[in-house]
Image (cartoon, rainbow, N blue to C red; front, top):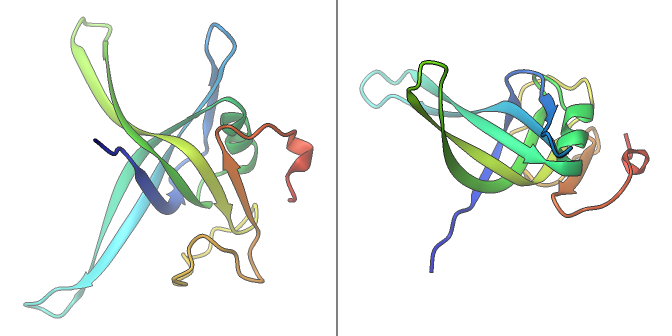
Length: 147
């Protein structure tokens, strides 16, 4: 038995990039930043480390992410890790590891770029936030989105 599951809550580092494969499948790429903070034991100073993640999503999820996400927007996502390789223009083998998102939940309003809410309930939305959940197998029109 094996498990390949990733759950992230973070903010987009850039606007999403939507492309289409030659067969017409939508694919959206974006970077997501997650941060952790701690107090340094020796100095007592607050420390912070930011980790950047490459995220890819497909199909209707890709189109909706491109339409409703933007740099600074907070998002919760679930997916799996995938490493792929290709040959660059000089013939060198290149590798990248990315998260293939299967479930994306938008947090906050469209223009929300405020600091992350420290609420332990990261999947839900408070009265001041909008939240919308998209799964890779959902089939609905963009008109169905409540914001």
